[in-house]
Length: 100
Length: 239
Image (cartoon, rainbow over all chains, first blue to last red; front, side):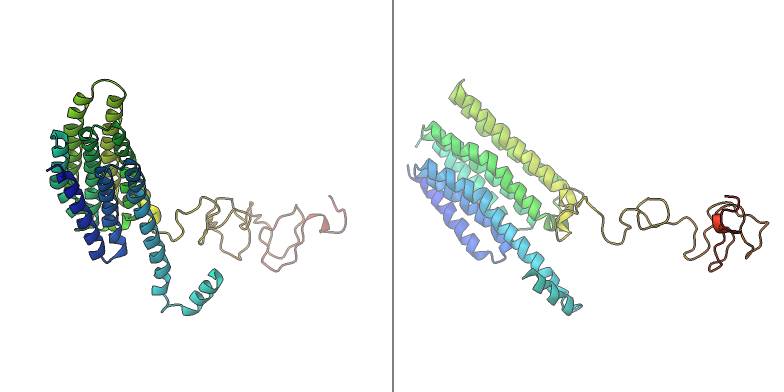
């Protein structure tokens, strides 16, 4: 009975981790990742480790989604000119060479 | 196992559970709103756990989450603005969800304040409650800002357009045109290449006659010898 909060926290962590694995699109995966961070923070607090919970919440709540979404956005922008490669392949080759 | 821990468990199972389901499924606007609700509810759970375990130090985690939770949600709103603009949230549902946030914050914070009594811990609780409410409000406003808000610069590949020299076909500065410096293509009725008739045209002169009164180009067809000024009629003639 006294372990009920701990069990609830563990169940939430398991559910969030499973949801993270099941979501395939990286842009959408940021959401269950943040949820996993939150659940882990709660679990750490339930296990009487508040400092670890502090670090986990700081990283998992704001930083991880930010990094994931920034990467997705950067990858999308890079992929966009390739879609126009059929129209002007020569110019794009120069652009990529300039970039490198 | 006291009442606070039971309340924390109940909030975790009945509140965070459905909100977590809303985060992992559905359209983007629903996920962002559910994410906001989840961070609020988890912060309240942490407050209840702090009271249940009788450890005031645990309140700091709730304070951190009250600050970072809305920041994280605003990150989503900012970086997923195009997806939100594609399928914007229904205002009534968003308002109902925001109201749920406020009610949950009040329902949990008031008993905790009553239990805490006056002092620093009460002030901390109030600060957390205000931050959570403010975070919900700001996030809801950011989601309904729409494509006219700060999400405009999502469309340009290099971020917001710089305020420096304009590019893309507009005339830069005014030095390259003969007309007034307006930054727009000079359009005051002149056809390019035609005779410049800036001043009054002297109708008494026929084209080709030597100009004897001042340096004007009136009426001279292009290509005609420029006979004006001191050069007309020999050096120093009348000038």
